[in-house]
Image (tube, rainbow, N blue to C red; front, side):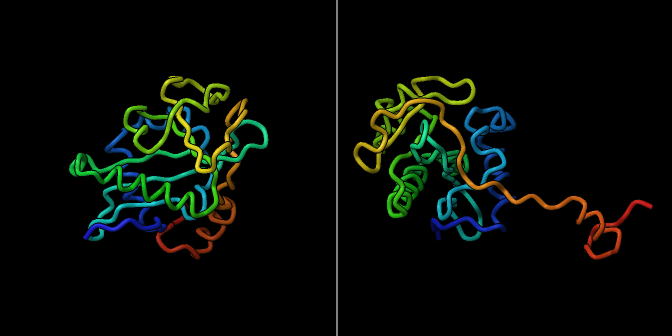
Length: 190
């Protein structure tokens, strides 16, 4: 059975393997990765397609500012297992992500992607002309969708990350715990 659900911590390894299979290591070089680095995705907007316990699709949305004081979300990456592409799962995942985004009260979504593909969901370059991203990108692939009419009217300037920072483990505490034998599976090198 195929279901779309929120991602859990148990899905991280499978999600990363899927993204590697779809995009390879070059995915870390992309400009939008600069907006995701060290940040948490928007609450409730990290979704996976689960097929009988196997992750075959993923999408996440991230808080950004579309210029000064203009909240928006950046969508991406979205990926479907190459073995099941062309079955309409990407469209289904995209529609579910946008439905949840709207239900949560977000007003605009940005992305960098193939314009002919994303036009069917309402994305266009109409509202991105006065915005720019922190790195190289193809202008015709920088797209926006307003979930509320006028949400990006007169938006201009640099798109920047605004989401919560990832919680990083305290390395000193981990080393101390490992040295005291408090962390199973970690041994000290003595």
